Length: 620
Image 1: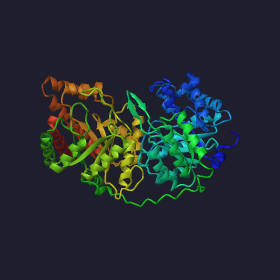
Image 2 (image 1 turned 120 degrees about the horizontal axis):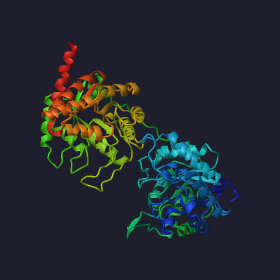
Image 3 (image 1 turned 90 degrees about the horizontal axis):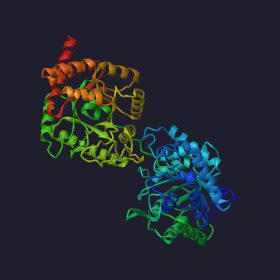
Image 4 (image 1 turned 135 degrees about the horizontal axis):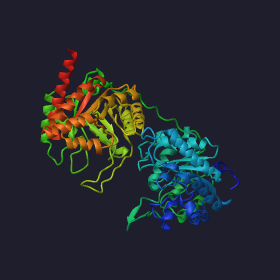
């Protein structure tokens, strides 16, 4: 191919190859292996697939490097082989293509969330994409295909990385749902202008859906953008046949849709998961059957994105009673509870009513452990608020929810009247009643805080207007005794930048720990609610001190618990320690959250009473 890629693409429709992974899987490569490593360990097998696509008539073949970035390779212990894997991948494709096809350096997502949804910065992502692209360029690629991206921000980082290295053409492809929106809910009306502005030479879609659904998305994109388009659908949706994923779209069916893609302005057409050389052969025949110029559009300027209406967020003091109290500088007292097992919530509701009578400002409903069948924290928070009148602070974790699932949960929580949220990442599942239970962790607490900030500005995660802003009062967690305090402070800074409005700390057993943490993390700029835990027994105190990471109980406190336990008053001493600690923490915090045994929630009122007594004594 002596003609430059873009020049050839402007003169005729080009056919890209099909699936690499499907072909390798069919040749006996297990899915738990790194397909990219095969460039080094089984190069003949990779070359054979490339050659099959060239013989089928592909004008463009992609390197076997879709997952050959530092993050994904590290999961296989291959990060140090990144350069060699990408270099060899480009050379294998170059050798197979010879002068018959262009070679596209394939780059896929990192496999982790980047900002604003994850803790990885866009600058870090850009650096990782750049090192992969550099090795592919060294191997002699003619262009880059950035494909199967669900996050436009991450795709933008990849485009910038490639553009920083030179002027090779860039094909940028988003993967979408059947409704045409990205997997994160961003509509073409938003991602198409954004990608065009970033300088992609070809915009398109690939993977996730079959040709019928993709055609609808292409039609939608073609009305927004007059430039070069690409489309690489799956061969339908996979079906499980005796443990194997089988794609059932025939080559002829795929070819019939290739014609429709071309009539809607697509200049680069191929296939993704499930497609084979025979699919590409039939698509090539379909392309040849169309007269030159059937792709009639020539405009290259994207349609302007619609202006997002200005929405004023709800003032903090108007969000909830707790938010109002903190905004006015009041000292607040919270109680922490966990959802009960089974269906019975009467005892917990009775305790909540008692706490309200005792003047507790709000009840934090924790996600708790996942042992046994428990009510969800969200449902318990709603029940407490509706049936007792006391405000709740819902501890919502990222552990068990996808990004879109969290958005739905949160909108539903808002509709049911919940306003106060404590956002946490959540701990990995422990072996318990359900040994096969897994976790999701689509985003962490930083990403979820960004989601809530966007909702509070009247926008969903895809940037589409909600019609009205939510009024969430957003809190985040911090551990003053974390094993890696520098990392804890760094993450806290990101949470605050994402829009956190208050902080709730893990239990503190020594005021000096909180003072030191706040001094080095200062200025936090938002209210801090300190965690105070009632030690119900010596056994519990020793367990926390010795077996739970990030908990530090001073030796004098443990000595007091040992002496009290020997005298049969362990709980009473634990309660006395909590009261003393609350008084000591008051000057450096704007509230406390009391952790007490679920059967002794009355201890929260005792700590609060001691706090009031201590404050009066100090004032006098």
